[in-house]
Image (cartoon, rainbow, N blue to C red; front, side, top):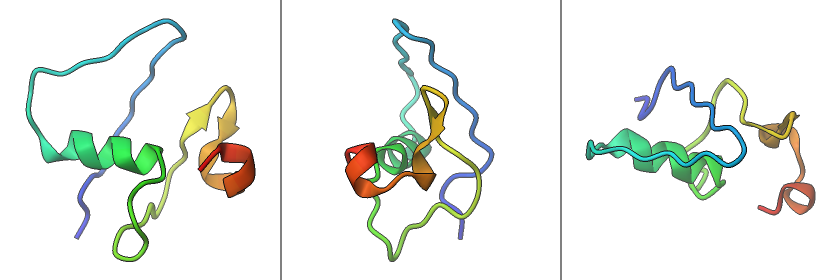
Length: 66
């Protein structure tokens, strides 16, 4: 079962995002970006999380701050 699929989000420096809709995908997406979804059961199976041009999924825990 996929909790979240096909998410694309771009936030430029100095921008703030918000949503008026209550939805599970927002929490799961943000927890995944921050590396806070335990594995197992959760995992990121494809894609990339880019921050300042670097893919956070390919960084070590020390260099990503996770």
